[in-house]
Image (cartoon, rainbow, N blue to C red; front, side, top):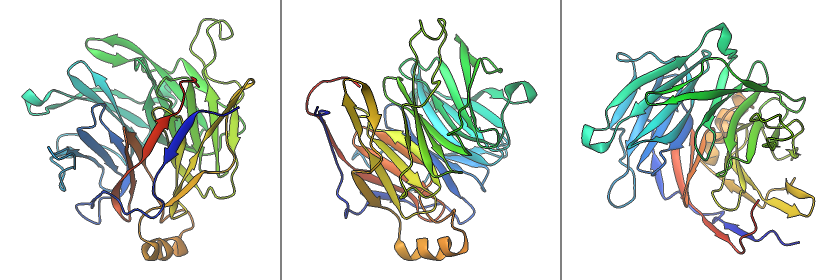
Length: 338
């Protein structure tokens, strides 16, 4: 059965735009687009901050960040990933810190000058965080916050407890574990929230889980118990982050230990949806000479780290090259849902 999608990106295309780190001390690890695409957030791990870039009228982004979250106004400890979600007229910005803390900010509307307020911090023994490397809000209503723990090989889910003021329960209501999870470094939901993909830095794989229906989960929100696919492609090298394309559910996976990102298509038949073990595309990113130099010293470094998608914009980030933004083409050939 044909799966009814088209995804394409020029393998040889240069990025449409590059955002260079403001200094060598700013180590880019995670990147996210706001829900409207008018902001980009970048987690700078060694710089202990989050940089915010605004979109210009021509669709490009300003070369320099307009704002920085971090000291002296707010202390962040090795921020590793960022995620946005719409919240009223503004945005929620969630920051996962490897120091076992998740911090939630609210970016208020343009007419307030994009004022940034600290909303909540999730931390402490009851939060069960262990080397917090990735974070995502569950579509379509952002009612759950998911966090991946590198050290405990688990994904924690935190329920939203109120909309106004916005807040999440500080104790996870569900912890996803599975033998395929090994040093999980990044995670992403599909646009509909039906699928959850997790990159496993420790065993060079990607695990994809489906949200269970309420009847089989006792009325609760659950993913699992078994992954529908574990991608074990030998071309994966310390996979770091993952993103779903909005309409076709291709998986874009970055490799911290390789100079390319991989794109894996979904494959649907009457038994359900799975993901291919082979990429339809392997897109080189960054500069080869820089990658070879860094990777020679550390096989887990040199490649792309964070990844984010908004409409036809694909952003990848790295400590070595900053942020690169590419354009891709995505077309649904028929309307078969996944």
